[in-house]
Figure (tube, protein in one colour):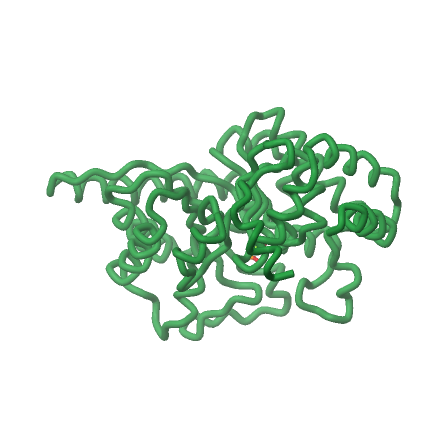
Amino acid sequence: FAQELSQDQHLPNATRDGMKVNLMINSSLGTDSSRARQTGADGIGLYRTEIPFMQLDQFPSEDVQACIYRDLLQEFEGLPVTIRTLDIGGDKQLSYFPIEEENPFLGWRGVRVTLDHPEIFLVQLRAIFKASEGCEGFKLALPMVTTLEELNESYRLINQAFDEVEEELAAIGKRVTKPQVGLILEVPATLFQLKSFAKRVDFISVGTNDLIQYLMAVDRNNLRVKNLYSHFQPAILRVLKQIAHECEHAQIPLQICGEMAADPLASLLLVGMGYNELSMNIGSLAKVKRAISRFELSEMQQLVAEIEAFETEAKVRDHLLKTMEKRGL
Ligand code: PEP
Ligand code: MG
C-alpha cells in the first residue's frame, strides 16, 4: 500500500477529470519543506503560531517571533502560506500565561485573548509583517472570531501594526506588502452572519475541529462522547454544504483547515460540495490525493446528492465506504 501511495505522488493534485484541488499542509514547528514539496503540497494552509509559544517559558519577543516566521516563509518560498494569529485558550495553554476557567472551550480563546491584550497582538503582527519583507503570497487568518466587532477591531490593529512596520522598513529602503486577511470559521454564530463576514474578509477557512465541537455540543477531546463527534453527521454535512453555497455566491475563496480534510472519504464530499482547497496534516496528503484522483468532479457532486437522503451518520459512512470499495480504494 505504501508503495502504491508513493507511485501516486507523481499524480497532480486534481480530480480524475483534471480539476485542480489545492492540497495544503497544516503545520507548526519544524514541518520539513523538502518533504512537503516531495508530497506535492500546494502550500501551508494553516500555520499554528501558538505551538512555538507553547514551547517557551515566556512570551517570545518581536525579534524572536520575526525569526520564527521568517524561517517559515523562507522555507516555503514560492508557495502560499497562511499564518494564523495566536490561538491560545481552550486546550492550548501557555505555562507563563495560565487561563483558569470552568469551561475553557467556551471561554477566553483565540482573538478574544489577543483583542483584550493588544500589546500581545501588536507584537505578533509586527513580527509577522517584518518577517514577510520581500515575500508575497502569505495570508493572515484570525481564530475564534464570533462577531463583526471583533473582526473590525482585529483589522484596526492589523492596520496599525502594518503601518508601523511599513514606515520603519521604508526608512531603510525596504518594502512590505499587505497580506490577505481571512476568517477561521469555527463559531456557529458566524454562520448566520456569513454574508456580512464574507464582505469584509479575503478568504474563509473552515475550522471543522472546533466547528463540529460547537455544533454538536461535544468536547472535541472527550472520549465519552466521541461517537457524536463525527464529520459525517448529517447536520454537519448540511452546514458545510450551506457554507460552500454562500461562499460561492459571495465569490469568496474557501478552504477547510480542520482534520476532516485529512479523511479521504470526507475529501470526496468536500470537493463535491465545492471546496477546492483542503489543508491537512502532512501524513494524510498522499491518501487524500489518491482518493480525489480516482473520481470525476461530477461523481463527487453526485455523491453529495446521494448522501443528502441519509438521516444518520452510520448510513452516510456506510455509503461512502462502499463507494470507495467499488473503486478499489
Ligand atoms: C479547527 O478548529 O478546525 C482548527 C483548524 O484549529 P485548531 O484545531 O487549532 O483549533
Ligand atoms: Mg480551532
